[in-house]
Length: 390
Image 1 (cartoon, helix red, strand yellow):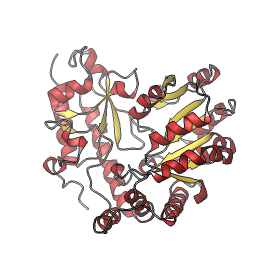
Image 2: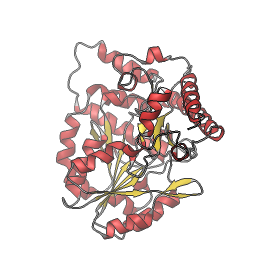
Image 3: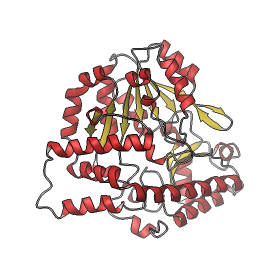
């Protein structure tokens, strides 16, 4: 499969937010891939399109997805869970919202290490909860969790930690030792919970993905894990994700709300996810190899381009570009966001860094899961703008 082939003209189809919100720009701000679908997934979609109707699912269909998910977790994450621990939901954010409200005190704050996925940045305040941003610390050029700041927030009464692993937008894949250190801290606050968003687990590219709930009995007790085939197999619009409960008491408390969400899940999404987890491994391997090369291209470009920096990416197809030098030099105006500047001057649409955390005004998030000629064109356009003298 030649992932170089799709052109911008082909990608700018009428159903794409990524390519139509800013029709004069290269779309690199929505976390989806421009590589089409795995043949196994595409066959499912075509099968539904040719059916007399797209109706409700039989209970056996949900059971098949639970089994496929559990099998994939064992093969990819070395984590043994029973199918009964797998719950099906349309998306991660809606399930996370219900879980946080059900399992933690209504007046307790939520800790979010930043930079983080924009959805969590906006979700927590909309829930009426206090959001405590904990900026990562830089060690040897990479982002690490600030355990002291997390401890301070827990001591002050926060009872939920959101862990995104692999991390969006930094591309970190947290090591077992890092997760064990976090677990040792969380164990001191036994009534707290960890919401572990592992949706980018298929893209642990340069380090193994370790599910946080798998590392100890305590981590299992405190954690709800969220995964989906949406990122790995490029089907976010099919609205199907999975919640893995590893604490039987929490599972009992959540049964009614999780059952409600299961009924709202897309029939097509359920069967596409089964096909992805069960049969889509070869296509995913090809995508992973292509993404490694795309990420290497971005890192090499950043080394050669003035006024931009990017850390080594261990996973995901997302990079978090640091334009603080460009800001300080005056190339990017102080009164304009990085993303709007680059969209206007370079014709490349990125995500504003502050959407990922209030401390990241000089950053922008870029999605690199696009054909390499398009990626190179975008990098060249940004580099040309940065090379200008303020």
